[in-house]
Amino acid sequence: MSSQPQPVPPAVSASVAAAGAMRPDLTTQRSTRRVTLTPKYGSAPREVDVRYLWCGAPDAPTVIVQGGISASRDVVALDDETAAGWWQEQVGAGRPVDLDRYRVLSIDWITPADLDGVQAVSSEDQADVLAALVDALGIGRVHAFIGSSYGAMTALAFAARHPYALGRLVLLAGAHRPHPLATAQRSVQRGIVRLGQDCGQPEQALALARQLAMTTYRGSEEFAKRFAAAPEFREGRFHFPVEDYLEHAGRRFVERFDVERFLALSESIDLHDVQPEEIAAPSTLIGFPSDRLVPLADLCELQRRLHGPATLEVVESPYGHDAFLKETDRLAPLLREALAGC
Image (cartoon, rainbow, N blue to C red; front, side, top):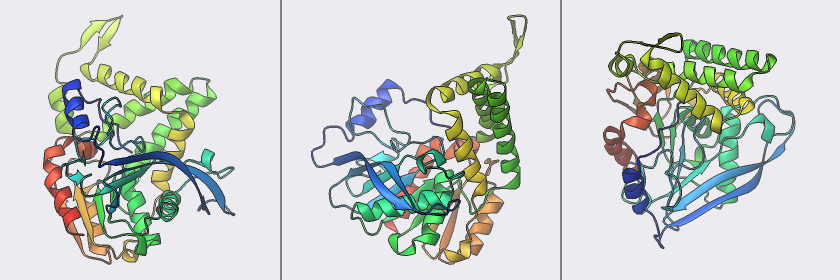
C-alpha cells in the first residue's frame, strides 16, 4: 500500500547499525516456521512456511511491527554488514521501539502462492499466520501490535480474531476498510499489470503501475515543491521533472517485487473489512491530513466505532500516506507514549 523507504545514506546507516550491532545482549532470530491456518478464501486448512524476524532483548515483551505491502520482515538490521531495515530509524536499542526493552516480531507477507491453490489472501489470513507464529514461538501474548498501512489493517484483523493474544494496537495510516477512491486507484494499477501480462510485458506494466501508485502515496504539497522546475526537451520530446522520479521508482520496484505478489497483496488491501465494534484492545490511531489513501474521516469513524478506548493523533505532514516512513522525529514520541501505555 505504501512505497518502500529510500536507502539510508551511508553516514546514517553506520549510526543506526551501531545502535544495535555486535550487542551480545540483543538476540536475532531470522528464520522460517511452518504453521497451519484455514484461509478465508479456502475450504480447508493449509500449512504455510512463514518467514519471520524476531529480535531484541531476550525474554522481553514482544511487539509485532508490520508495514505496507512492499515492506519485508526486515524492519531493522542489527548487523552493520546488513542493509538497514525499512523502519530502522524507529526500531533499535534506545529508539522509540526500544530493543533494550522489547523484542520485535515481523513477517514477510504471505500470498496465494504460499497457500497451495487458494485464489486470494486476506488481512485475516495474515493475522492468523501471525497468531499461529506467536503461539509456535511460545510468546503467548504480544505487548503491542504496531501496524502501518496494510500492517494496520492486519493489526485490526489480529485484534478482532485473537483478542487475548494482544495488549495494545498502534495504527498508522490504516483503517477498518479501504476508502472506495483508493480502491479505484489500486484497481487501475492492477488493470495495467494484467494488461501487461496479456501483452507479454509484465515488468514494464508493473513499473508503470508503481509509478501511478507513487502519485497516491505522497502529498500534493511535496510534489509542488520538488517538481516545479520547467521541462527539458531531450530524446525528441519534453521530459517533466516528475517523470524521472517516477521512472526511477518503477525500476526499483520491479527489481525487488514480482507481478503475482503485487496483484495478490494489492487486492488483499481492497478485500479488507473489519468491524471495529469487535475490537476491545486499547488503541492509538495516527493519521495525516495530507494522506489521500486513508482520509482522516475514516480514522475518525474508526475511533468512534472501536469498542475499546482509542485516541487519534493527527500529524501534519507534506508526505501524504508515506508520512509514517518520513516523519521520524514527529512520530517518535507518539510511539514511545503508546508503548508505555500498555
